[in-house]
Length: 264
Length: 264
Image (cartoon, rainbow over all chains, first blue to last red):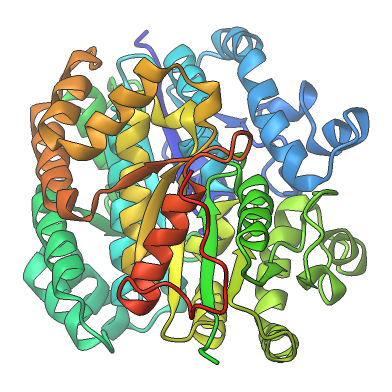
């Protein structure tokens, strides 16, 4: 049996990580694949996720606040580092639950994941050759040109930092109009359209800043792909599966003992 | 009397925002200028800051957790948005405390400041023509080449998002060796040196990703300046003052009724 394919779901707080993990698990299961869900957020407040492996068994934000007499800010930082110390326990638990896919829900605040040395250690310990980061674009931020650029730069930073293939997903498209979705996707496909939108949106253009950021956008354009998804109507989950397979196996489906997912 | 010069101190959690605000206030006061300190972090756990205006008078993270029955993650997001609703109270309090400088301590997690629509509204309401963002580089992250690039991209994102002059400060240089400080500063001055350092540090080079990020680094190079500072030995505070003056007034010192700061 192949090593499982691991997908880390990350994005700014409120982008819909937990909902997408839950929806994608149920899509995979329906399609005949086995999936293990790992929660790496010691402060997770979700009651719907029901992870198979839960970092809160070892590190729980509320306990860290109490034990170290810290407020929520300080406790989140301490907890992020304590999680790194438990990574081998997580790895051990994973090795006992062999499945086709591992879906990892990362901490609510992306900063605790993307900008701390401890998370690099966590990813290095957990990731094999078949790993992928799904970077979620929150539509409330992505629908404005400057918010879109911010997310694009954050996604590029995450990709650069973790050196794992990174796939951008626009979440909650059910909350957007079709015209809004189309506009956002056009920014992802065409850096020129994005630059135009940013300029239209800019009250006081700053030539030096703009030209630097615009050239940065153009440099990153080859990395830009954006897949529209919804955890409500499950749109985008089949393309997410296809893309993950492509990354993990060069495009082949899993072995035929598994039912192929519906094309619908 | 001129409108006060406003400096927003931002950076990843633990970068030393609150310590630097405290140190810079005391530097300004010693130099004969008046400074108002504003705390915009509803979850601030600092006992040393003693702000003149404190968002916690209106929004307090612990109260939001209790009142809305939220955990720390959810409460931080809710609190960030509640802060935006109190911005006119802050503005009113500021107008009653006219001073030469306003130093704003922003939320511990930079994400709550940099990637939420509410903080754009806050900055637009509070900032006049004389405003500056001080973006703090945490030395634990800045001392590795990939961490440095991450911070550079985050700083560019913040500048792009808020469209305010942004000045990068390396904090806690007292915790680094002189050789480490010199190396970090060389990356800020010379994109080529940074690219070399990143390549040396990279176990598995990814040509497409690297060339995209490297071209982005080079595009952003004109925006790169990095001032070494320490809240312990107060180094860098006089250059920070000079730079702020340059931005606020085109390089002129404040009116001569104020004692000029020591050059030492």
